[in-house]
Length: 381
Ligand SMILES: *Cc1c(COP(=O)(O)O)cnc(C)c1O
Image 1 (cartoon, rainbow, N blue to C red):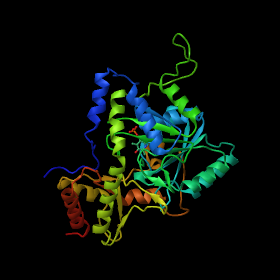
Image 2 (tube, rainbow, N blue to C red):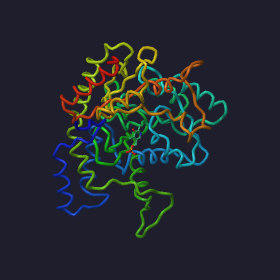
Image 3 (cartoon, rainbow, N blue to C red):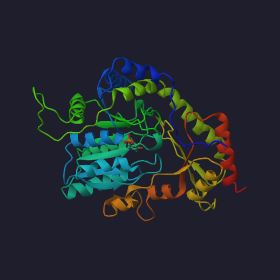
Image 4 (cartoon, rainbow, N blue to C red):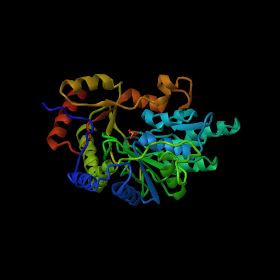
């Protein structure tokens, strides 16, 4: 039986036209008409003033932190429950990371834990230069609450919306609530350019600075002149062509992923011990990955045992992100839990959760196959 993947690229067919344009006009470079159009299209879609496309989402986070003045010895706060790419750029800049736990309504940054961390930092006269808030699996964090706290301490938020492109938060596009937002177009994301990312902001100066830094920080001069450290982080004009066509079908992709989540929910939520990732009121997740948790006191299986059983029938599933405060790389970093006594919320979710196939190109037959297997495994047949 054909392997069913977690999330694979889903082309519309129209991408080839923009790639052909790039070849026909010989714009085979990290600049050109496709890049300009893709940036305009993303800014229009998100409803922000500007966008700066990059070679990866990680690169966009790196640029965002650099623009906010993060440097050697500075402090940066980051969601613990996320992929390593959210945090690595702070290390590139020599900053110290402090990790913030999740809350249970969105699985994202806990406002309570953030407030605790910021109060402590203020007392120690070590407020962070930036807070990286991640919107996991397509669900926006509690941005109103997080922004109120961050604004109180005058610390800017970078929204890592790599996974939440196309999702909404109270009528706004996810990724547009912080001072800077980033999306990723990596191959497994809801839309893709094979690899790529973008920095978005309502502050045009920030977007201009991103373009400048991503182009080796080249000063305006008749020769090559440089006053600050820059990067080579621009997106290829060929890949931007893929992005233009992908963005045109983003809303369809969101609709299909939400439909897949709904189907899982209808078919599996009646099994005792199974819970699904919640969706916060007045928000719309893009359901990039359908995620569920298994209560070990009711179902005697951990996520790895379920993953192994699914693998035997050629279906890919995956554990939730291992929280960064549990990573060997960060064993000496500070962490603020959402809970006083018991385990951290992100730790509990990690121990119980898994992601199931969610690709928008999955057929109804494949979805049924996944559901049947999950029913068998979780009901213990
Ligand atoms: C994918 C991802 C990134 C990084 O994006 P790349 O384009 O792969 O560099 C950052 N943060 C999160 C949460 C992601 O899932």
